[in-house]
Length: 362
Image (cartoon, rainbow, N blue to C red; front, side):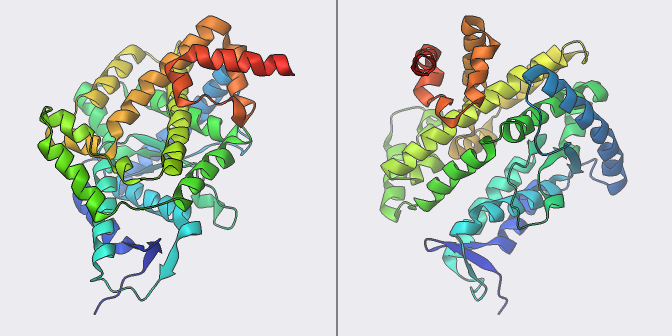
């Protein structure tokens, strides 16, 4: 019988081979995926990544401590492969390797289907991504990369008749802002990874009874179907108070970073990118326009909450800058204790008061 290498987290098995196979089946082969096409795109994005890094540094004052950024254009399959690699690196401290696990293991196959479906679906939507996970004991050439999913970018350019040069620089600015956040703020990467590590160490997969209860609440709810699904998210399967505190802390950080990314994306490109306002409008509508199975998928994954992060984070950044100025906002990068909590992002005045109090104490 065929045996697949798999891993276990607190008794949960992951058949990585099956997971990647499922992801690629869902992703399907997209137009603009030929190697020659991707090579041309890679040359293009190498230049735009260099330009974007300079624009981001000028707009934020954040200079990467990890050297110049490196671009890599991939097809959907390449993006899936890169994310499986990052996922396995991320889970490595809490994984127990089990090379003898049979492919017929039910838990392994179910988990593989779940992970594969998520990454496969996301590969059809994502345009760019900064890979923030860096491990010193692994090949650094395969880490700290800025990925661009060529087929998805070309498809949206064709569909909306975008100017490729302007759109690609605009995308690069967003991803390079994220890299500046994680490599220009010396403590940010380790802080984020410590939050994720704490969450993983607290993992308690919900019991079958919890799953049935969640499903029953959806089925019996009098709310419209869309509202019912909003109650059934993967985050519901993290059940302890400590886990939910960790999730809230991660959510607050990502809301700040996503909002900051969108603000800088708009600010840094002004005077350098024609039709920037149209790019912003189309991509914003694309984020919100999910229907049918796509909409359900977004709800199950909590992606709708991520979309709200862009808006809440951007509003937080703008409110602080308008009220107190950019220098005051930049205190957020000085120490992990200065990061806003979720309730402070929703009410920026709470964060302003806390930071002013901290400043007066020193």
